[in-house]
Amino acid sequence: MVKNAVRKAKKRGYHHGDLERALVETAVRLIQEEGVSALTLRGVGARLGVSRTALYRHFDDKQALLARVASEGFKRFHETLAAAAARAEARRADPMPAMAAAYMKFARSHPSHYQTMFSGVLTNHEGDPDLHRHAQAAFDVLLDAIRRGQEAGRIKAGNPVELAEITWALSHGVATLAMARHLPRAPAALDDLAVRAWTMLDNGLGK
Image 1 (cartoon, rainbow, N blue to C red):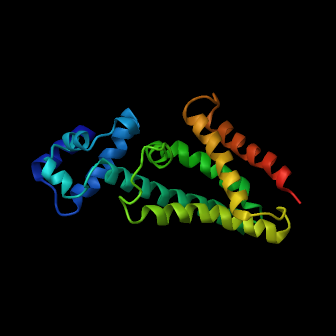
Image 2 (spheres, rainbow, N blue to C red; image 1 turned 90 degrees about the vertical axis):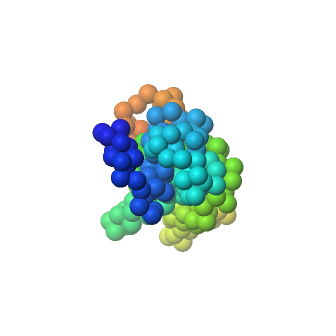
Image 3 (cartoon, rainbow, N blue to C red; image 1 turned 180 degrees about the vertical axis):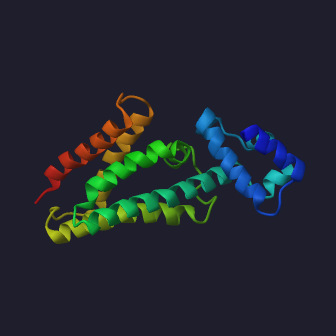
């Protein structure tokens, strides 16, 4: 199906804006197939059958393309965490367990974005103007939940940024080990593990 789509794209050419979108989507597929470290701008162009001139019209280099993938990933990540928190709070429940499970599900559902966001391969964070904004927005969902927990008396006093960083690191550790297949569990069990990890941390943070 992908090959057919590429052949059709070659025949009709790309309208303005279509190529940029196609480059990003192809990069995501290649990362999933071969890993983020194997991605090259030339390889993405070859998959689409476009010239280097056309590539550089949209992205200056590989880092710029990776920055776009990471930026889109953080945007989706922010939306995922915010939605999980909102659903929990609508039930008057603690949003943290729901966010822990949402973190795990995002990593599993968007492996290419997750690799690009967190593997360290992205060294030029200036490649996309929205990257920092979306990354900060995702972190702020967690930070705001920590602050609300402190205000409600569920979480003890302390630097909320530091507590958010510790919580993020815990969830990231579970998700990264799971993606590397060091945690041989079914998806639902991994979600439960992420929640239990938060619960154990919560017991330590509890007032």
